[in-house]
Length: 193
Image: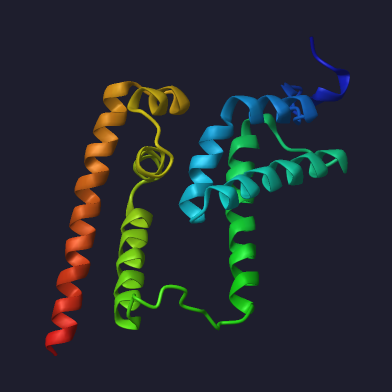
């Protein structure tokens, strides 16, 4: 059943159906059905589970506010809109935190500053390698190693087969190994100069 507002008559006399926007029930349905997918994406952007949960919740709240202000989000674009919102909130949070004091305290005096620096470099190398993966490979890696999902759970969450998850995971590991090794070779080359 079409609403009269959804139908427009173009000058060429072709009847077209305008896409309808989402309402709050659509947003709640998206939240209940795909929360884990958005959480996995947010985990790529922030180191803590709580931070990732906050990103996802804030993104959904922003979408609800957007819809309540009579702004239209096309149903087919809701997922992309949420992903972009999560990313933008993460960037905004990062900017806010980087403006705060740059003074860091070392709580464990048994770790030398050099060790902390090396650990920081290794974390950055892994983060860079993760970023270079395709979106699906990155999501599978995060869900497997950071969120503790089983392969069958990942397949169900991403609506792909178990063998596809295994393939993405295998390729992601291979690509990460290559990226980390390339980074190590580059660091070694820089040190020798």
